[in-house]
Image (cartoon, rainbow, N blue to C red; front, side, top):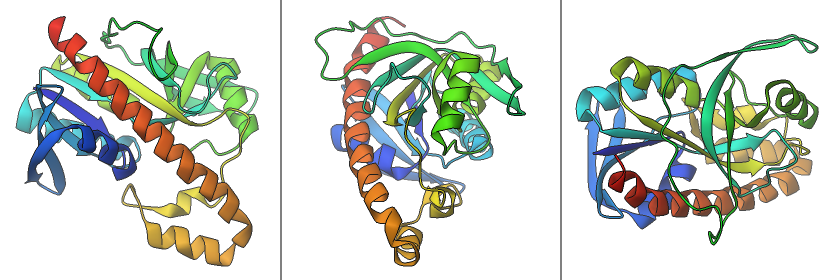
Length: 251
């Protein structure tokens, strides 16, 4: 059994379209999609944005399924000019941001042996990189902040869930693969209202519409992000489908 954990439904749905997962099982307040992907048994879950949502959902996943492998996946912000929208980042180290005082940035590593799939980097329909993943408590919206974090840590991508899933996996002794697909580049600012789009860790379309009505200038930026999410979701789902047989063949 492979458990695939993402944050939001916009990351989950492209994977579901490639899977045979018609059974939805509610565990507490979480909806798990059970079935197969690339012929392998899977349980899929959109766990919500942020470390606390990720921790709770990861613990529930292990309690209910006892997976042989967990894949923590989703979108990520680019922290280096070498990675671009739609690129896949396979984590070979996970860092957690502990302090950002502008001129002083501190992180701590999550001690977990990560599975790094043996997959060729050429001949794929998307670019793939291996590197560090950084987890923060808040979304990194400003380009200058992304570039500063990338330069200080050497991380290629930032998100808000990976380290929490990794800590639970390490406690349970479950191997893990960490994957992020870049949805916004290091030189791009996200709308300052972005955090207002989410309730209980999930994107709320009504809030997006409300912000657009009140701030028409953000519409163009949001349209660009929507297209990016479509591209990144497609690449992420396709890469996971390609990767799963290799993971299953080399436990």
